Image (cartoon, one colour):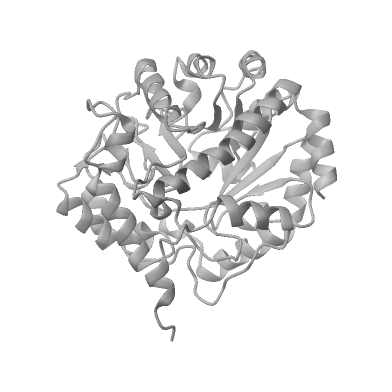
Length: 405
């Protein structure tokens, strides 16, 4: 499996793109995690992986979207983006996830990539604005991978994403990326309307046949102003996803990403471990993309490192979440989210200004933490990578030590 995957990448990814992925993301990214571990020993939590929602605007209207895509545009300027990246680089960071809205609607996206050839960027996109010209520009820069969202067949895609011909337009952008030799991934938010079609060996084989290099399975999170609860997965389906991912990782020549488990199959939350935080389109420094509250902003005068490491709000969120669950505190304990936001006087970072009411109205539900359902990694590459670079960093000590019924 490993040989087939590496062979396919060498044959299909542009040499510059492959080299920058290997060096900027692989080698330097691993070093940034080591620096993160060193900071933890001093009680400083500054995530090695920062996710930035560059703007709120989008050309689609997806079910369950928590971003104010239908509101007046809010965007982080190029100067602000440049400062964020520079201040993070000063602490050894090199990896940045770029989200929206739709990142390709930001007029200075490519300018940001050009300013930081020593970093690596993952662009979360619906793919529809990736023209052949844009793909060639990304190839010349070499320091970005596109992660294109595919949410189901033609009918499901139109329903989920609020437009027509969504799948065809998305696949066109995906094809432009692959033809240009970009390292290209496909993301899916698994839910009731697509799990039967996309959580399958046949779908993975189709991606491989198309030339896709990696895929990322998320689970649908019913949050935001228009929660579509009927789409949420049931606990047994969440376990099914985990079993499928670990099995296919050991069998098929495509990288399969997940963000919610360690090498032993124990659930974790990237926010609670401190390995990632989020910056929203209005500049708020948030625990994660679906927690739209902040007490600090990138528009404050504080250096980003100082803002994050001194934030009582972020620390409270991490520690409270880790004390109560290995899963998603927003889904399992929305009451705690409300309590922490009120305790710190956190501001609502949305444009709609209804985040507190939305959290207050949420009903607790299952997330990725299902006790007695821990499924370890089967393939040694994933096991080692997670063992050394992606685990819980000891934040769940008290929770793991509690008696189990």
